[in-house]
Length: 491
Image (cartoon, rainbow, N blue to C red; front, side, top):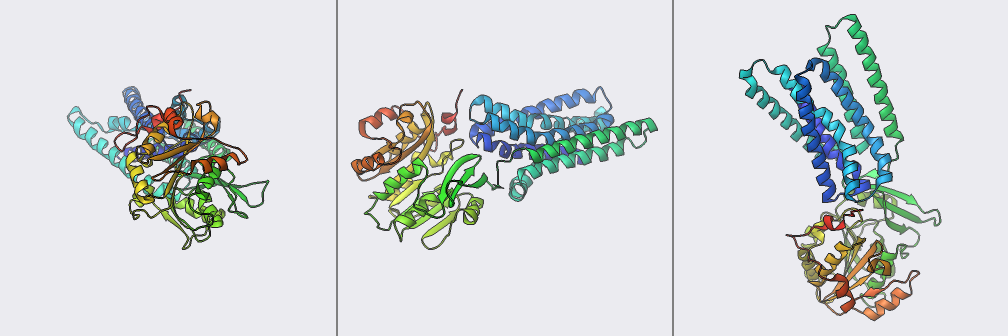
């Protein structure tokens, strides 16, 4: 029973950790989650069938220990394979998602799922005990899976890097295999013992190779938070420049020497709208949905002294990283609140923000509950009659997501506009799109004039041109928001 509990538990550890292994390369979309679950269930089913088939043809006592050894090798080899392959296959296409998740989860889970049927065969003394034996071991296996799921989700992922969890699982499987082999075959003859010794040496050597490859494999993280694989690098062209990578994608740029500097084009567009949201230099109250590198709050503090920014960031580890490396200094004028942006926004008073900045979407994953009409209604409530809402959206051909989001925002706000490169608006390339909305008329001419003066001039569309771009896109709601499906690239 201990063996079944252990093997079933490791299966769920691998399934949970698989999501974190592939996230830097595939994102954390519904497709990725579904693929990991589907591949894992397929591996469990095939492993159980394979284990039962072999149990009827071979003595399980001679198979179980080598099976655990093979599982250890498969786990040890998964980490380097995923990291090297992930760099080459990064993307959101269906083929890439299925291939990466299959490489990550299928083989080790299949091997471990062959263990319970073999243990059943060992414990089955007579047909009269079939129900009792199968039921007891099934319950023990389920209890092991539940325990591992809770421990991994609540403790292991928060306390240890993914690589450490994988290597530890491989080592534990190898030790369990060696211990089980010694227990089951302690009465073997001398030749059998010599053969077993050679097997142990081979398994240990291969496990050491796999562990070494795991250490040498490219690691996309400086730090693993509860939600992100994060890395901060220095800009060689600018002493104070820092670049934040989240899940291997370039996410934020901060100039420690000049917080008013906006490096990325889309942040410059946000800066243009923020500059025109109130009289020049006047302090404003801003709410930021997503912190990232805290670039825009720093910009507002530098260009509008006395402004108050409240930043809702779900990842507390990212806030800590920003404090250590990106110059974040929380205080009376800058509050970083850890939690879900939608829930926190609901606690704010009506008309309490002059500017709401939405920057929680990535190119590999989108929190769908921040995209819906119900969410936009909360944003309008907080911005009131005079506030402005800007939201960064990343999309590519055929731009299904940004069109739907544009339709959703327009269903709540009477005045809307969209800023994006011409190639993106024409559906020829992927890019950042900046949605601009308000309950009052927007200063469209002033915004367009400022956009034309940027280092990379960019158009803004509104009115009939925006309506033509949006077309008949569906309005996203809490009941219907297939955001992940809209962002899948089929090629």
